Image 1 (cartoon, protein in one colour):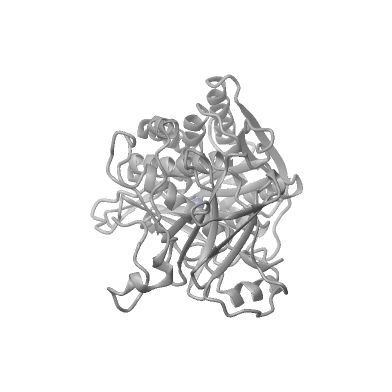
Image 2 (image 1 turned 60 degrees about the vertical axis):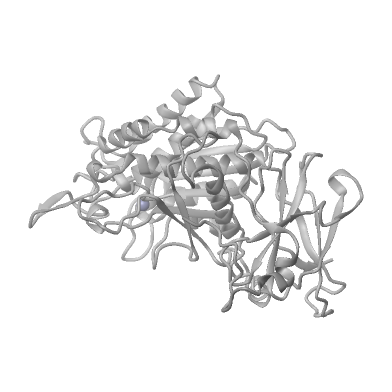
Length: 495
Ligand SMILES: [Zn+2]
């Protein structure tokens, strides 16, 4: 399977070498595998995932509204599920010398408004999360977050008593968060990792909205949010079109938090496929190339083939998820979902009708598939947490911002190190034809004879490439000595 096309998008073939964009640099190579990361990924286990999802199903109905019901049978309902998830994070922490800060954020959600409100009285809601603090004091403010929602629903979104197993939607996503926590808590990273299970998704993204607002208010430096919702890999008998080796990654084209003026500039520059969320999605495909993509090798012992498919929209058609809450606060956030959903097995009462089994049952979850998705999430978090901070103030130096000033067939790009960048950081310039989905070529800044003025944190790098910016989109990545790459940052006209 091909992850990145190395061919320029062209109606013709055979002439590519004569083009400026192919004359320098080289096709982007996968990052070298980091044995620590590969080893951590090998810990992610389908058996653990089975156990997690089966336990979440055993709470029978995890409707967020069930937190307000007094007479639930013991061991059922959303609060019992929150207690259990909290205990799981604590158990994981106990095995890593209390390396995790485990939080339980309980708050009262005010009712929604309008005739379709899915919360109609003040309702207790709980987000559960665990933080693995970064070890580099200069970088520990940087955060990567993985989340899934632990609430569930059946046909009637207001029902708190019927069986609503939510095995795929979204016990599978919670299993990804917990398995990422278990596997990655064995390692230490310069940046901070956050493992999350939220409630309130089915009632209207309430848990994630609360957490995203808190993150904004507390100045969390969230560099990436990975939302896993419906990653169970549905194994309905007879479904010929499920692909157990593909996962969709949805990312917003234009930031939800962009102002009208920012949107105008994004469209003017043709940057409507270069939101920070989309660069995050591309970074996940980079992690996949190294860690989950191809057949197993000695350095990739557990890879079993998972192709991330970039989906160039914010979510599935007319639908949404918890990543929206983070997008709205201005954070880069993407959604992972299985290749093909089965709507008989989500948001349905458990029943048999005309011989067809309905309901989001454990029996339809492919635990090996969830494990592959968890490995991709863990690999993405680990690579980005190990990589240096993305460069900042990445610009095409124009004397006057947003005024057309030259017609050069060469391109100058400038950037500065992000806050906390280690001294041994290198940079790579990447590019792709404007119509290509992913970065196609790269050149190390050193090889492109980058000039540096100033020192350390105040350094400014400048590189000039003999490639016209008219036909390509450029990006700059920060790379550490082991080859971990940051997401790309696109240059803006600036000074
Ligand atoms: Zn869901």
